Picture 1 (spheres, helix red, strand yellow):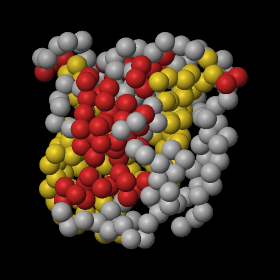
Picture 2 (picture 1 turned 90 degrees about the vertical axis):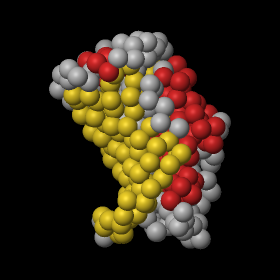
Picture 3 (picture 1 turned 30 degrees about the vertical axis):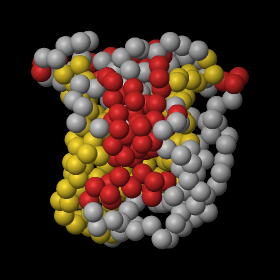
Length: 287
């Protein structure tokens, strides 16, 4: 395992603003924890499925860091869009960075880059009308979805933290990926319970999403290694594309996949400096 470099430089790719949030939110509509010190060699996957799933976020956090790839598929009766991202998350310093490719036909263009800290996200977007090199800073409490879907990705900390709210967990089987044996589980989770279990600013996004998403028992699938670390998690969120509507034709389904590997690798993520931050108002909802 590589030594974790604790860099706090402050960089992120293409910006996203309230305007950017609004644009990505429009694309979706058109489509339809505490700090962790060091890795613990004593961590082991629990034989009880629900305990294993509940523990995944904390055990993964104790690895220090990981590379991440993301996929967000948004689908409504009218349209489907797929966002792909890559980057990493430093669980020890509680900061991550993702670069997200915006699909053709979305309300914005170019690549979105975001830097994530507990309760805060910084955004850039190469296709937005924002001065080059500038960032938009948002509190996740400004976003109806808590930034779980509106940026085109679910950040690795939130995706893992959501598992703290698991209500049901069933062992599906054992699969081999990347030369490792992984246990595959599925079940449902409650984002409000996950927010409470995560606590602090890290739980704010989960709490906002719990209030907004229309399906409260969120389906998930997760793959864990023998140490209990999260290698892949798929979570399916649903929100109303038309505010207040409960009709099936107005619902937008979002399937979010986060995959982690190269545990302990250096993650180059840092918070933008004050001089590079501009203010913009975000969209009030993810749809």
